Length: 129
Image (cartoon, rainbow, N blue to C red):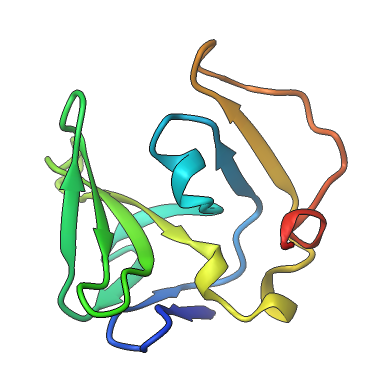
């Protein structure tokens, strides 16, 4: 299990296990947030707590949740449940302690082609700074 929290600690997430990868997305929102996403589903491996504010844009299928006190980007959540009734989520691994996530391999997602780029051997520690 790993945990993350915004800077002030008001918003938190818990991810059961260690993610197999962290995604860097180059969409106009994610590149501005600088987030590293690990994916799961609410109530099935991912739990969140704390009051958030949201930002929804474009096709309005994702809501980005951030702390209203410190502004920390905590997670995204689908605005509608999936076929199984759960909401897909992505938690921002930058809110976890660096030593816990440093070895997680990176996946670079290109929104122009809507595909993941070939693996290049980098991990979270390579982009932490």
